[in-house]
Length: 332
Image (cartoon, rainbow, N blue to C red):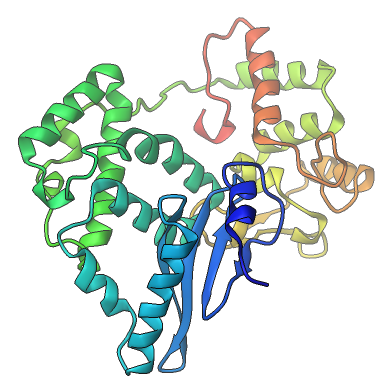
């Protein structure tokens, strides 16, 4: 079913729960995010391998223009030329900062990185740098102009300034490796030149303090799943999301091994942890009390949210006279 401009206007910028991809014709389709971000793309096969080219975002790129670009790409394809050369000829050394960021986000971040990382980039580099130097080729911006912009960022938030610079360099470097632009002065500026590193906590809790926290969790009026989650985090030293997202199938009580799937791992690798005797009663209680999702929130079939888990720790911490300690037991 062909895409219509009316349909795109209805979807754009609004919460969306429909199909992630909607086809138009001749290889043209749109990818739609849950937040209503619409990206045109062209799909084709080259030497037997599937390829996808991001054409641009709606409404910056209209449906009419996306169809015209698709027609041009098909001409290249049927003449025996890889459609990617269309963009090499069109955009070399003329892409703006916004175009570089959009291309990087649509073709790398949104297709490769986890949703949590995507959200981080949206709230930092995409938010702070997307509108920098509008309508100017990224290759034409001088070091001095970048320094002036980053100095203002540094005044506002030193730690964020360094983070934004590091992410921006990654995006520009990605575009340069794909020969979308030849050069950009931002690559001459090192993250250490601006802002400050995020502070690393050095608070180490004593066994006596840990015991106080354990009892505070036990005596709280929180849900059973929330209390079990944080007590088991203290015993295992796992990352919050590794355990928060856990399901029954991950736990082998015969061989006493918990296998964290790569989808739940920060580094994208499988992790195996022993199920030791002291933690077994807590695990068995969770497995007996709940269904496949061991640590549900309000919806019994969905894991408790990060926000809800962190709110619980903040309440516990606020009611104790232990000073500040980070919410992750593995860091204390």
